[in-house]
Every structure is written in structure tokens, then in C-alpha cells.
Length: 166
Image (tube, rainbow, N blue to C red; front, side, top):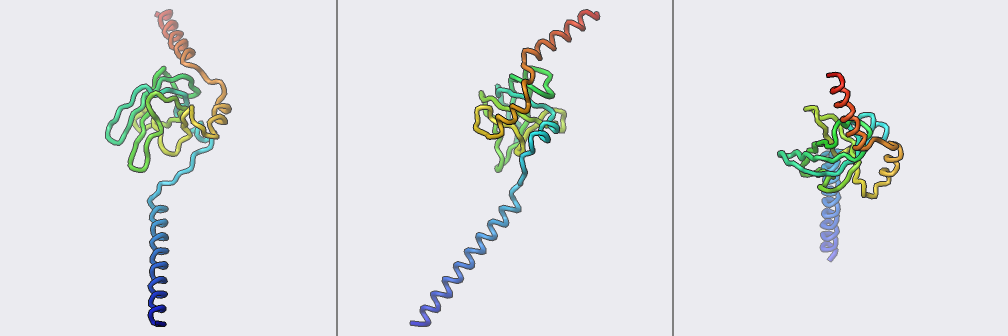
């Protein structure tokens, strides 16, 4: 009977130690394979962004692992030259874009290699209707901004100046 108890104890210890190894190994693998990043603070995100705006997604194009979101710009602070703008997002099995058609977002977009705009996982971009604690603070720090009406006015003003010069 003692031999049987000792055998069960040894088997139990083996399963406990092998289970701990599996959990430990799984955690190590997750740490190695997870691409970790920290969301930049507001000042760094604003400084490094090529464009900062509030826009509604009006169209989505899919090009391989890249989705291109077209936004109707409602308000902007930086880098916008038109009332619509496209922002690319690369997706993979571990990252899916936060943007959805007909939703409105605060977007901090960076410069893409081809001169366009790109956004990604470690971004301060947020759903404007979301419950992010940083959203109100970011909007407060951004201040009033410019509206698309003022952008249209600037465009019309430039055209008028060009016509006067001719």
C-alpha cells in the first residue's frame, strides 16, 4: 500500500511540475511573440503626427493586408488640406483596425513611406463615441481647431487670389 501511495505522489508531482513548465513556457512564448507598445502621451503623439483631425469613415478599400479608410473631415488641427483624407492601416492576425464605416474618430495619423497617412496599433486615435478616459482630455488639449467650413473658405480664398493675379 505504501508503494502505491508513493507512486501516486510521484505521479502527482510530475503532473504539477510539467504543468508549471507548460504555463511558464507559454508565458515566455507570449512575451516573446507579443509586439508590445505603449501609447504615446498626448504631446508626443501630436508632435509626431502628420495629421490630427476628427473624421467620419465614409469608405473602406482593402488592398491585401492594408485597409485604406477615407474620412470626411469634420474638424482638424494639423496636416489637413482637403475635406476628405485617406488613412492606411496594416492589419494582421493580431491587429485589427479600430475604424469602422459611418463612425467618427479622433485620428492621430503618421507619415506613410509613400507620402500618405498611416495609423496603427500604438496610436492615440479613438472612437469619438467611445468611453476612453483620454478622449476628453485630448480634445481639451487640442482646443477649438478648424472646421471643414474654414478649410473650404481657405480653398475658395486661395482660388480668388489666383484669379485676381491672372
